[in-house]
Length: 88
Ligand SMILES: [Zn+2]
Ligand SMILES: [Zn+2]
Ligand SMILES: [Zn+2]
Image (cartoon, rainbow, N blue to C red):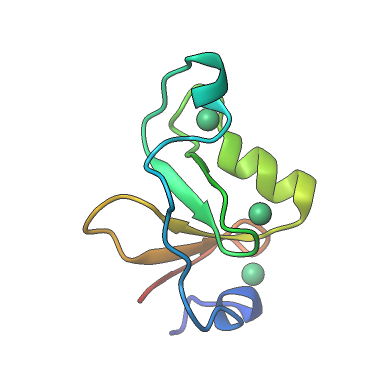
């Protein structure tokens, strides 16, 4: 995987979303576009196209760099630190 990075390489089993909702937006009744699942702690949050961008906020605040798409039919990982992308 040429575009991968050490963080993505460290993911041996891709964590899937437990719920198809943003854990932060749902508390406030906010809307989101797409969902991403943190590969370190497994929380599912909204993408950067969503108004509140909870997944990237979580990645930076918690230092959990790698997310997976939580959208059906999408099989990819992304690292915020390296701006690296890999399909699986
Ligand atoms: Zn990385
Ligand atoms: Zn959100
Ligand atoms: Zn996390």
